[in-house]
Image (cartoon, helix red, strand yellow):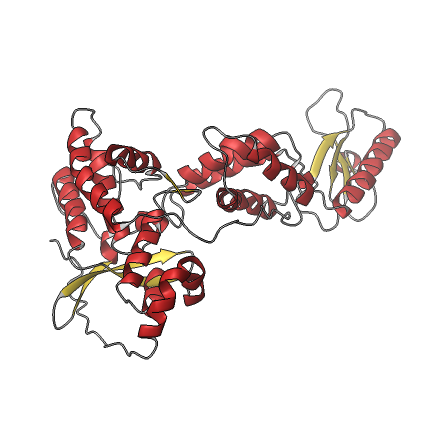
Length: 404
């Protein structure tokens, strides 16, 4: 047996329990490297002994303990939720943008409450029971107001990437049961037409006021974003991820309409802007052209910070605008958010006899979902539209840059 073989022992003879000594040390202790069936990765620990037999007993005992731990759903590489969160956070921020734009809002949502509650838990110990306790805890732990069940469901969506990362890394063997309480109401808070007119009027003064507070650019960009959302029905994340190369015009017999190619949670689709709404995109184009000293390139984000990076959340700006307009954030037991603009678009289109089938395609949803959330509007519209046929519009793809 040569020196190398003397410093390495395959205890079980199958490569699962290996003892070895690190070279170059005066009095080296045996190190153990343990691999367990059906578990990703391996565990390396010191046996704290130079005695062969003691080291073998230590390693075999550890192997048996880890084997039972993994069989019960645990992981060889056990970490706390906080450790996994920090690792995941570093991973996604180095990746760049998420599908809908920045990861900032998702990270913040997890960090504020989930890390506080789950932080010290071993990641593999978190299951249905722990999540049930978490949702109950969240109901009485909040900064401003008690979260609705809808808010808890959005928090679950933010949490899932952390657990999926843990599964990918082998820290857990399966995703935990995370179901939050079911939403208690299908009605989604939005705006009346009069409230929207008030917001439009107040928005001009709100932007002008930003010049005194050095927030003009943030308010100007936010204003255009809010108007675009209310005139397209896009999801917030879809607009965040929109690039200049995703825009084109479609010509009909009567007019030309701006069309955006978006990528969202239901896949890829084209979204048509309401007539005249292209002015909001043009304002963003002109702003970027002035800042860059040239036209933005197709790969640039339409909605971005001055340095060109995607904007994460605009919730504070939205709340500021509502406050300036004197529009309450609370309505019908819910809180109006930026997402409420999508609901405003849906209710307005349905009240103007837009076909629910065409609207569902435009919004990347289904007629069933429209009926669920806007049933009071859909019912009369369905009766009027279900026998109608739509006219095919001709498109002109040559004009990819409508503002150059």
